Image (tube, rainbow, N blue to C red; front, side):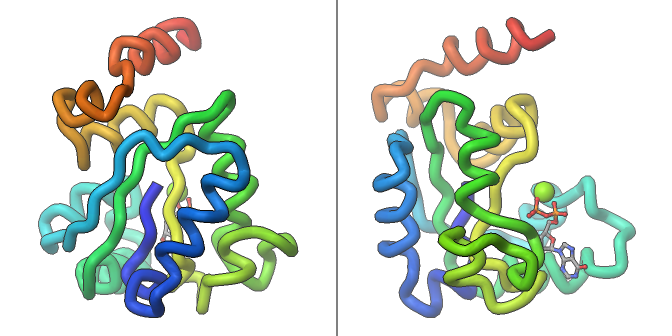
Amino acid sequence: MLIKPNAVKNGFAHEIFLMVHNHGFKILAQKKLQLSEREAQAFYRVHAGKPFFQGLVEFMTSGPIYAAVLEKENAVAEWRTLMGATDPAKAAEGTVRKKYAESVQHNAVHGSDSDENALNEIFFFFSAREIVNAGGDIYQLHDILKNEQ
Ligand code: IDP
Ligand code: MG
């Protein structure tokens, strides 16, 4: 998951991590960083060509973000539920986006949309060494994926 620049700027990162923790996720690893333009373009490459792409890249590079690896049974779906709908106007009560998103673009947090993408996104931000040193099992991550195929 990512905490996007608007939420970090507004000082909500700690509260968001607290929500994550209180909903039974283990925060396996986390770091604060600022994306370069190339990095943001690469991270959001599936959206390249969409009308909001350039704005999204500008927004995501506009300030520091947090990247975190969350662990829980069914983590992808569980985090997407807690995160809420992309458009905060449609996000359910009690979700992160309902609470902290300002608009469709400035929607406070990112979540992976499949285990396969989660693995790719984890390794976009963290090295295998960092995951191992945080107590994570990268081989388990690969196994989860293999079992789905
Ligand atoms: P998701 O973050 O809920 O998975 P996606 O459709 O994958 O939503 O879009 C990625 C990100 O692109 C969104 O979180 C949001 O920041 C931005 N975005 C998506 N649709 C729009 C739009 O119509 N206008 C502006 N920004 C958008
Ligand atoms: Mg998405």
